[in-house]
Length: 334
Image (cartoon, rainbow, N blue to C red; front, side, top):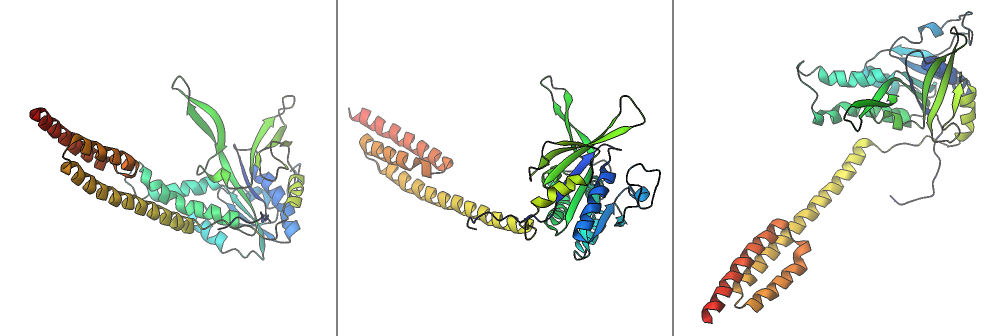
């Protein structure tokens, strides 16, 4: 694959949003998707794992902001299999926005699917995690490649690490999902709500943009975020098409071939090393004097870096034994 001039192929927003309960994740996302639906002239496909949208699908005049009903299509499931099947079957001529709320439940489902095949007292073995992650990561990759705007919502978790005293301490927060999930979207936002110190009946919701590959939002914090945030990103989406990731199985196959070549090189080295072992052993045992033996030793040093350690050790043993024999003969002759 030769290097070519970089070509921007990002036509859609891919955003991850996480935060604690009540931080405004779902409502804020609905505000974002509403404007994107108007922009694309297409529908919103909402995967609701916790019935979090039930109160937003009808008009509510008592809702201070956006009392109108939100308009979108939804499925209600926590099954990773069902979500994967339904999302992959979407007609992208009809749907222009996909929301997963929440990805935390789908990650739980991936783990539970494996745990359901285990005895209750067993723990998941290390070698099983690759199998557990594969369908989950395949879904995330599909979402990143899909010709639609995508919002992946997740619950918040605390991150702990060992202190210098050996005690666990909280070092930060992150999205409660498979560890690499937050790295996949182009934009990652943490939501949090803070109660007004002067009026406890009011809360301000903040959107803290921890990552933004467009550079428009990175490091910025917005109180009570609105659709204007999304509007600021639209000029960045000048790609003619959505970039596609390499197929994970295809990558694995390519790299497997590389490993095979490496194994072939190792086998080739081992074969040449065995040949040197045979040749040098014959020369050592045929040495009639210490000068002859010393000459063989110098040749061995020249080949040392090409030989296997175990073969060098064998030569060393033969060399030392031969040297002792020749030295004894020389002493006897004297």
